[in-house]
Image (cartoon, rainbow, N blue to C red; front, side, top):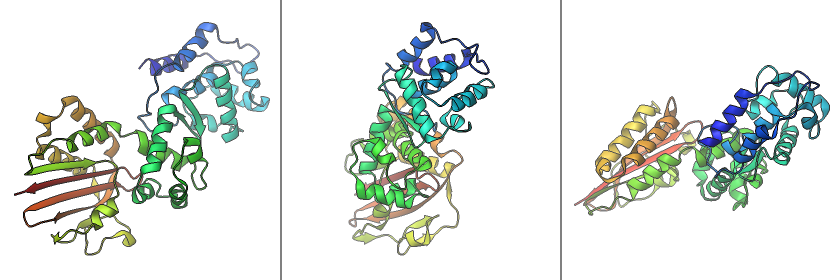
Length: 346
């Protein structure tokens, strides 16, 4: 997109001086593209980065502004450290900025303020929270996710922030992403995990929704979901039991009653094969747009490559004339989850 091309061009073209005495202020031609950036339609952040596309102007501001300009927003010793560091290479992330001596959370907010004042970012960049710069769309998606996510999924998304997850559940509904970032127990890693859960899998979510919406003739069908409460699904009571689930990778306290424990975790190949099988079960290639399928599968592959998954596989029936088969996979580190269900009826 134009937004990304502009940011890359500015970064690549920047020439830096060591201290600031011989620097010149960016011309109006240099500053204008950053202003145009802030006017583009907002996007969801689709990769695991710490600066949303709409917020790239924060980095452009630090990389191209003169010593004197930066000194209007930051202490002089911080400016000196930034200018000396950028002389070796332009800053490419907030983590990169934070690696500079004396640059912490407060300084990042001051940098954000300078970038906003100088029109390097606009309203489409909500700002920096817990060391992540998010767009307006990111913020909306984060609020929606936190307000609707199940208890079990939220704890899987935040495996190392259980107190933070509990606090989020107790305090919701939220009206803003900053309010979520300010919750006790939510820090940089956990806020970024929440952002990722809210924004990184939208093409696959679109595929799952499209597959689930395929009309059924009453004899067979399929469901695919990205967000769900796996514990409720696995432990639901059904009149006609077909044996306990086969589970893998669960904490002992999370193993459903009667489950068989498989010793090996699931991998990307198993998850992809299950999704492919579900698509084929309802002949999705003939019923869904090819673009939805290809984009969804490409997105899925990006999210599961090299990952390991816990989960359960089981069958159930609500009457003697039908059967359902369910497969649940949950990333053991970041909580990315996939559920497929196929069914038939006489």
